[in-house]
Image (cartoon, rainbow, N blue to C red; front, side):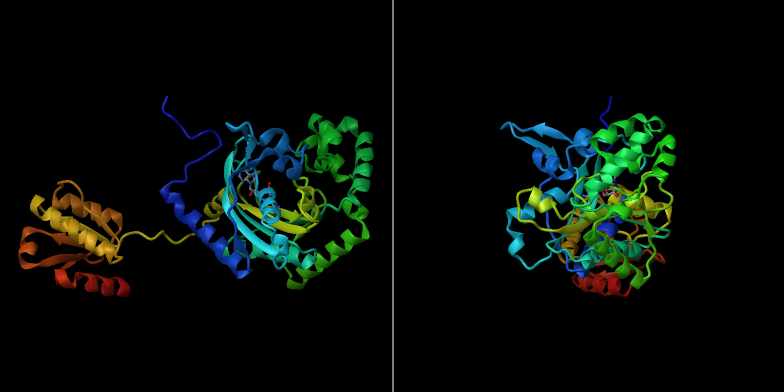
Length: 422
Ligand code: HAM
């Protein structure tokens, strides 16, 4: 059997790269607009970092981590997400003495051993944004509006902004107690997974997709009514900021997210038309995480956007992207003698920053011209013995097939001008 890319991974082929490039460049531009700085972190970390931050009873830690022992016997895990690594780096490099909040973004692959389906991969890519060191709900608003502006500038339509507060260690346990009691009373109506969740990770009960659990979820107690004063005020202030700019959102009491570090605000952005895996972005506040990882108590808030789902949505919505830069000039030649001069000419143009595709082998001029046509260049340069003898190059304008001769010594300037005015 020939080899295939591992299940749940994919090659991103040249024809898809313009989308990827456009998405990443747009993200970088908007991050810089909001004052976020780039940070790269390792693709793998010590396993316990993820266990402590994402949470021992989450799906990610229980079932989805790519964990291995290295040759030194250390247990390492391919990052299933960025937040844990970013907060680890924040503590390790003493960023708490920098002006707060520290605004950081990262782009790269993450790994989860999930069941692959449309929009769900085992290797996927995230644009991750974190703002660490500030409690103000204005910072929640800032990262959300960064996300919102990102999708708007990509040209997305029909986005749904889902918002909730999951409380804090002061008020959440009270809510979880009430939720568990309610579920105990409805134990006969729920699926097997939910019976397990009831013991291991009760908040995730609200996230169940099984038909039979929906009526139970619908009538479940809502966390909003159990938030402490501090969490309520934080949430109300945030909603006030969002209302003041008038962008639409849905309060979703079922939105609990799959990572344990969240406190207070959580949010997701859903896109239309890409099936069940429609969350193109998810995030929230994590005020206890830095302390949990051994740093000083430091609040933080952020989100991650999945590039695969973004590209899927762009294709579905017919959003066009600019092509990647490619050579505008093709160099063709006739005969072996001339080939060396043609190669030299291509080299000269490239070192003068004019992109060139040069013919190869000993194909006929006709087949070289065909190749030039297909490659989408603007000009084809033809070099034959005749041209060589007179120290000129024949230049063919591919738009109108008109040809003219240009002196070899003047060619770089001529092309520069012609390409500029094209
Ligand atoms: P998350 O919701 O697990 O959050 O992932 C964020 C986004 O990554 C999802 O909305 C989705 O677009 C994409 N994604 C996740 N898993 C997959 C997958 N298997 N295949 C394709 N795309 C996927 C986090 O990762 C948090 N660290 C976000 C965060 C940052 N919260 C605070 N700061």
